[in-house]
Image (tube, rainbow, N blue to C red; front, side, top):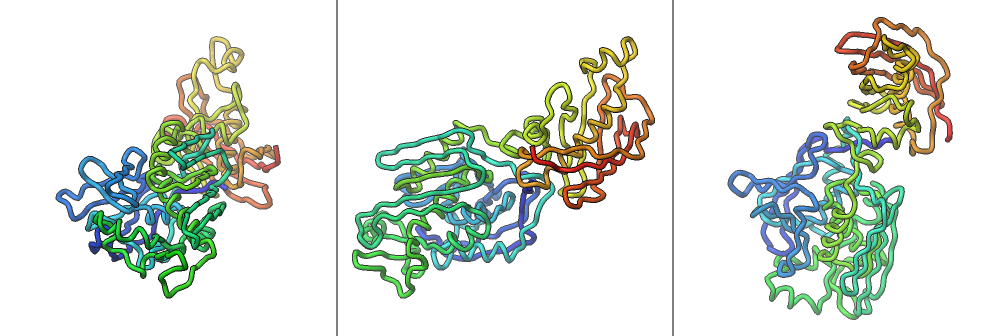
Length: 439
């Protein structure tokens, strides 16, 4: 089924302490419009500068250590991985996050579960435009010393992670999850930040983990954990690594489609991998292809992933509006180069009425196929045409605008009411009956 972009319904805030700076921070999440993306706003700085979540703005400094940083010029936000993981895990595409400090607030227990509860409580709202994915279309591999990272094509989002520690309590752990909202909320978000006790003094000497405590991190010794609460999962440590990895991958600024595999990776190598992915794979639109033309538009590449038609019978150039199970608006640019003008009619070119109906049906087919899980595995068959009327001829140079409304959809049988306009004038209309079949 076509998935639409999401934002939150209402403003919500979370107050906490930065893990490394130890400074208090209030993070306020606000709804944002279609294609706005994820933007952090530093309200504590003059002019309230923004930082867009994007691979270009992803930054890692070894001196900062154990955190993910976004920077646009001199404006930075630190330790954003848990917030980004939550947004990715819940499928939120557009939101404004106002911070009154350099470092984002850490959840009180060191996990992402409080952020899940907060944002679900704000309400998740489906928006009018389809999601624009970053889709892995070819293998991408990164080796960084003993760290290995791999992305391969996959119809969904899957993360596999392996950690190896000399600490006997952590040891070697592996986990693999196909992620959706529920899996993230139940299996990944509750996993807490952890630190080896032997590293604590060194990190503090570097001016880090000033806000860290046994309450917001699992401190691991050789013989167990320094915490009154037992581990939430037998493999909680690797699950938290998946949480961090998901947040770092979302630095790409789009929902993800692919299988991402990591061995012994941390924030530094994760960010290097994100930048390599961004360089080698073009960011994707609907179903993994660019969607040019503005907010909510589907370009011809995306249309060709939905519809099976090809030259000379692909008769829709762009989808302008797509409202789930309700309506669709598309256009067909009619040029003198159309092959049918050679015989219809020489010296007096007119677009055949039957092809106007065919183009109308193809626009409707985009709406109908958007209701199934994988449009590329389905076809739309015509079953009937009623009340067809043709009011004006369509000539070379015209742009046909088709507007179709879904009247009924039952058991894969669909009835639509369609109209075609040129320069705002009605030129044709019809009621279309069709069905979905397997290819």
